[in-house]
Image 1 (cartoon, rainbow, N blue to C red):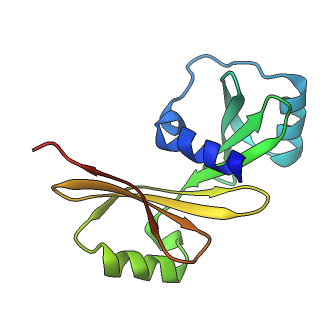
Image 2 (image 1 turned 180 degrees about the horizontal axis):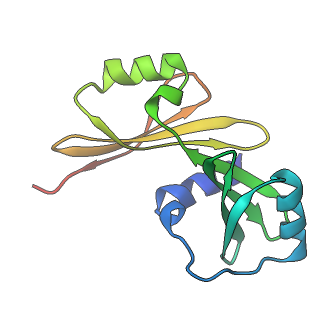
Length: 148
């Protein structure tokens, strides 16, 4: 669970949209694990950090992001989704409780033990990030008032 939270923090701080312009190399453990986990992946680009490596790739026409520890352990996988791909009860709850907001970012994050959804919502005064662990409703992950 700790690894899942670390990946979420990485994603929410903007690293998920940072692309490396230069192909970086990863160690053999990471490369081997990735090739096993995502056979058939195309356009793979690596971004290597001190504690993890991030692969940006396309699989089945979907852009995905996989995060690996330096030991080659898959920490989590994310993909951007559209609201219609949310579980029905999450979508209904979102429309009911946040109808005066618009969606600016929505992604699904999975690891071996769970799936979570993160949605960034905005209105004229606030930016709110909601998290749902599984399909059991939303909780406020962060809320920021926009400058006047």
